[in-house]
Image 1: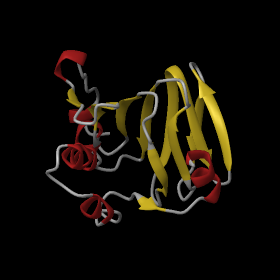
Image 2: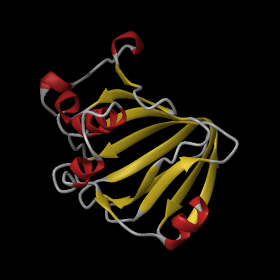
Image 3: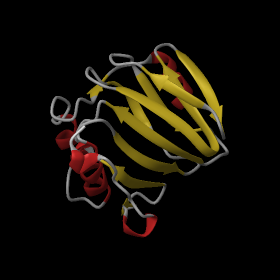
Amino acid sequence: MNKEHTMTLVRAAHAEVLDADPTSVITLLLDPQHTGGSLTSNRTLLKDGNAGAPPHRHSGSGELFFVLNGSLDMLVEDEIHTLVAGDAVFVAPGTVHAFASTPGHDADFLVVITPGKPRFDYYRLLDKVHVGDATWDEVGATQDLYDNHYAESAIWAQRNA
């Protein structure tokens, strides 16, 4: 690792917080430029009733989810798992997954993507959608740029029905 990236410290008071969606808060922690490409990380709070992330896959990165507080429903391929505080799951590259707070609960969790992919601008784009400065079509057009490829899941659709 480059000496420049032997340590990166992110103080909570200085982390960028995205909260345009009244039912979620994404705190940007580390992107590849901070870690020499090793990882990307954020802390996410999905409040009860938030739709969460739709089914998608990442072709070049795996993703770790660690629940800090509350309860998170997690689709992995064709199975839904309910994670609670202290639970962790790793989703391998190419695996279809989705997540949302479990009905009746908030979900506060850490996300670590490895190897790192620039994602901060993707999260900022999502924030712009919630204030009307961008559209969901614009988000969909970034699938290759951010390695966030949307997928279909009948099981997840049924959960959300």
